[in-house]
Image 1 (cartoon, rainbow, N blue to C red):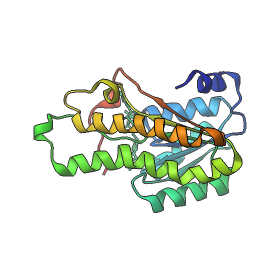
Image 2 (image 1 turned 90 degrees about the vertical axis):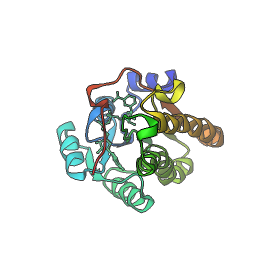
Image 3 (image 1 turned 45 degrees about the vertical axis):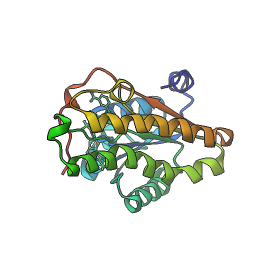
Length: 205
Ligand SMILES: NC(=O)c1ccc[n+]([C@@H]2O[C@H](COP(=O)([O-])OP(=O)(O)OC[C@H]3O[C@@H](n4cnc5c(N)ncnc54)[C@H](O)[C@@H]3O)[C@@H](O)[C@H]2O)c1
């Protein structure tokens, strides 16, 4: 997270902003949703598990919402963004947090696994960013924050394709930031390091 974004969280400049968190029904995404709500944002908790997203949003209090969204499906992403906009207002802040991982040696992994990890971690970030961007540039303000990983900076054995997707998320953010910087939209990356207990196999059905 950039110093500027961290400063906005500290100073309460997020009051009234609408923040959409993908994969917000658990783990790091749930924590991010909670922090954004504490900083004054109206939070849209979006997840493949829509019921869990609604439960998390309800626990945040009034003024938040939970929505079903599959980040790998541009139709689902657009529908969820439309539902968020109708319920809470246009999205000011997007946190691309949804991610999956399977820890195993690369030579034991299958093409199906590679494709699913790339679809959620990289294409999901691309798809949801695209779904919110026009509204952000039209309004001249937006914040996109991608959750990468230390694996995307230095590589992680047992997470070879995952590491590639997390590196791609970093490069995507750098390039998109150059395109939209003059339109009031910033794009940043957070790359968590130390694994949390939920960092084991993540493979939603
Ligand atoms: N946990 C760690 O130690 C760690 C370390 C570095 C980076 N990260 C990154 O942080 C992010 C969150 O990780 P986590 O450990 O909290 O994961 P998690 O498995 O606890 O939570 C991920 C959430 O994403 C949702 N999700 C999965 N596929 C989805 C899809 N297609 N559409 C919408 N939602 C989907 C899941 O339902 C789940 O609620 C991921 O991008 C991960 O790569 C985690």
